[in-house]
Length: 496
Image (tube, rainbow, N blue to C red):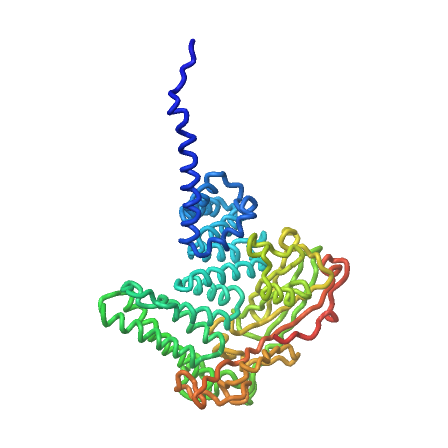
C-alpha cells in the first residue's frame, strides 16, 4: 500500500506557526508582568515550586505559565477543599502557600490557611500544636500587607490573638485596624471599613485589658452606628437586635463597674455588701481586703511523658488553671522567631522539631482541680529533645468567667496569695490607671462617667493584671519518670 504524503504547504505549516506561538508566549509573559506589579517577587518563590505543589499534575502548573494565575489559584483552592473534607491536613499547607503566591489577593485563603495552621494540627487529645501559631500569624500579616483594603484578615489576626494567645493588646490593635480600613470610593454597599462585629469584639477586648472606659466608648460607638442604620431601615431585624444588644452591654458594663469597684448602685444579687466587691470582707471578717486564693499545685510523672496535675485553690467553681509545659528557653526562642521569621518558615510553614509545648486547662470544683496530661502518644508534636523544661500553672482572671470577675475584678484587683504566687506585669504603660484606690495603678481613679478617660487631654489607659502562678523547673529525667519531682523544683515566677 503506497504511503500517502500531505501536501508540502501543509507539512511546512507548523514551522510557520511555532514562531508565532513563541512570540505570543513571550508577549503574554511581558503583559502579565505589567499587570501584576508583584510578579518578580512572586516568581522568586517558584524555585521550590515542585516541592511546594503537593504532588500536583502538570496541568495545575501550566496555567500560571500561560498567565492565568488566578484561575490556577482557584483550581488549587478547590483541591484544598477536598483535602479538608478528607482530613488530609498535611497536604493543605503547600497548596495554601502556592495559592497565595499565585494570587496574593485571595483573602479567604490567607484567613482559612491561618485558621488551619492555628487550630487543625492537634495531638491525640485534640490539643493544638502551638508551634504553628507563629507561621499562622505571619501568614495573616502577609495577607494584611497584600490586602490593606480588606478588613477580614485584620479581624482574623485579632481573633487569633484574642482567642488563641490571649494577647489582648495585639488583638485590640488588629480589631482597630479592621474598623479603620479605608472604604472603597463610590461603594454604597460597604459604607464602613468593617462589620459591627469588629466593634463588639473590640469592646470585649478592651474590658479584658482592664480598659473599662475604652470598652464603654466602643459600645457607644457601635450603638451610634446601629442607631443610624436603624433610622434608615427601622424594620430591619438585624439592626433592631444589634441595637438592643449594644444598649444591654452598656448597661451591663456600668453595673459591673458599680458592683466591683464602688460603694453605690449595687445589684444586691451580685454584690450584697456596702463595699466594692473586690475588697469586700471575706466570711468571718469585717476588714475589707483582697481575697487570698492560696494556689497550691502538685506536678507528678505517672509514667514516662504522662503527668498528673492536682491542686487546691480558694476560689469559686468555674475558675480554670492554665497549664503550660515547654522547653525552659521556649519564650526566648519564640520571641526570636517572631522578630526574624525565616524564609523557610514562610515558604513551607516549617516548625522547630526540637521544641515541645503543651497548653491545657484544669477546672476548679469545690476548691480542687486535677488533670492528666498524656504526651507519650505524639512524639512528632512532643519531641522532648531538650534537657531543661518549665511547667507553669497560672490563674489569669481576664480569661475566666464574669461571676468570678465580679468578686475579684477585671484585673484581679481583689486577689492576693499569701504564698507570694502573684505575678504583676510591670510594664510602665500599664501602671497609669486605677479602678479602685490602693489596688495598683498610679493614676487617678476613674469616675465612672468620663468616656474615654482623659487626664490633661491625654488618655491614661490600662491596668496591670494580677496573675497567680506556680513555676517548676524540671529536667528530662524527671519527665521520663527516672527522677522524682518535688516541691524543691518550684522556682520564682518570671515577670511578664
